[in-house]
Figure (cartoon, helix red, strand yellow):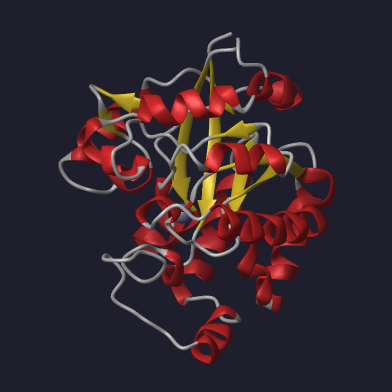
Length: 268
Ligand SMILES: [Zn+2]
C-alpha cells in the first residue's frame, strides 16, 4: 500500500528548542515558578493555529495523528478546545505523545530514568485526555532521538516511533557519536515500528523545512507529489504493521497561524 500518514506536532512557542529544553540552543532559562505560570498560557499564534487547524479539518476528510505535548493540558483553554476537537472528529483524529514538555533528550547526556519518569507522566496525562483517540505512538521533541531512548519507550508500552529525520543535515540529533542507523537498530531491537519522516534528496521536507527558504521550495514540491492519505479505517493497521510502506509527513499546529491563520499544508 502506498499511502501518506499526516501528522501534526502540537508545539507552542515556549516549547521550541531555541526557547527551552536544549543545553545550548535555548535562550531562556526560567525559574520553576515562572515556568509553571507560563505553562498555563497559550501564545496568541498558538491560539490562531488552533483556529486555523480546525478550519482546515473542515475542508477535507484526511485522518490526522496529533503529537501532543502533555504540559499543554495545564491550560484550561487548551483542555476545552482539545476535547471539543476530538468529539467533532472521532473517526479521523488519533493522538500520540510528543513529550511531557519539549526537552531535547538526545542533546543532553544519557538519562534513562529522567526520560522514563517524564514519559510515564506524559503517557498518563495523554491517555486520560485523549481517551479512545490515544495511541502508544511517540515523536521525540525536536526530533532529538538517541538509541538509549528506544528501550524506555518499549517499557512504557510504546509500539511506534516517528522521530527519525533521516537526513545528514540533522544527524547530530541522534545524539553524540550516533547515527540514524543506530537509532533505527535500537528501535528494532526494542520491537518498535519506526516511521521516519519523508525526506527529499536526503534533505528535510517536514516541519520547519516547509517554511524555511530554500528548503521550502523542495519541500512544497515534494509534498504535492506525496501519495494519497491513508484511509481513516486503515490507520491503525497501516502504522503498526512494519511491512506496510508509509510516507510520513508532519507540520506544526503553529504553521496554521501563518498568513493570518489561512495557511494550509501543501497536501491534496
Ligand atoms: Zn516539537
